[in-house]
Length: 126
Image (cartoon, rainbow, N blue to C red):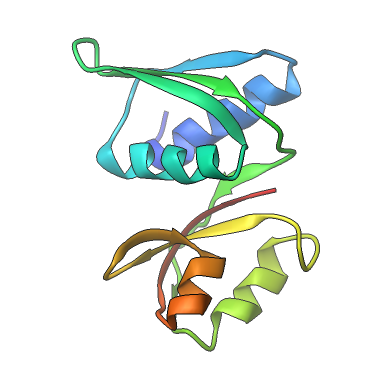
């Protein structure tokens, strides 16, 4: 395991999906990871997740997605560069979501474009 909890967790989720599992238990969690899971749940890539605050774990029930990865290094993108990175990481125009950390919190690239804000690229899934 590396030092990046988000990259490790998304890798565990992707590997569990590829092996045909319905759920995965992530043992190292952070507030950033929980916010990413909220966005993934909104986009139906994750059906549900349950946080065990005593054991500091989260149980994730997988939804409908093909790929999910952390973006390394975490590029900074202003509002005009979001489209460039969307073309770089997502396979098609209306397929997938990039997660961006802005000064207004974590949001999808669609929300960031709509609000006209930029930020740091965190992860993507489709």
